[in-house]
Length: 280
Image (cartoon, rainbow, N blue to C red):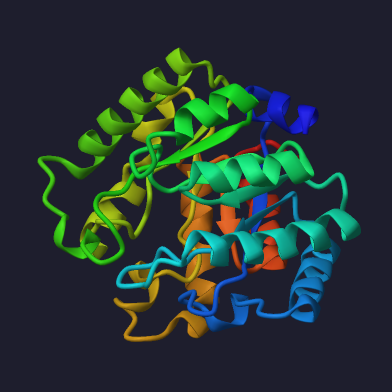
């Protein structure tokens, strides 16, 4: 993980974005093929991502899509514990992030498995113990922008300027996190979280404005509603559209892509390096 940290902190030596593969252990994530409900399904998905040369696995045990039902802490723990055990068996040295907003989950997983990155969709807003816990354990941290809860976020989409407001929020979070003693911080503008489809595209079009925050920039747009809604389609049918927007995100400064489809994302990052002249 030390090598990944050094790479993330220096964009000059990081021409090719990292590919973060999504491992959902929930029964209701928005893209059904990503759901892993058994140890066999988890193992199969992990092995496929490893074969496709994933850089990083992101494990979620509590769905946070709009209108989803929040899992209990015990349900989330059981799912994540099972997934972590399987991943550590098959890929003991692969970087892992845990997609959770609960500090108690972070501490329990750390006590059992050791270091990982915390991927917090609430940037500490949903659990006041999260930032102190991450600081104490000295874990890398992903801070995402959102508003409200899965049940309310679709009604919280008023912004003065969506990009400017998100940038200010993330700047404030970076300051708060650094002051708390968390020094490896990745930012995520939160595509699809309290943002309309039009706002999502404004954000993607002006994504480069967030690079001035001088933090690694994670983008999660894979198969989301912002792709399939304008196309009158469904998540299963927008792989090509996802790849097209991944390329745009890379050219706008994204340094990590959170994806369902590792092989295709790897193809995009390779070609993007040629487009930018990083490879000859």
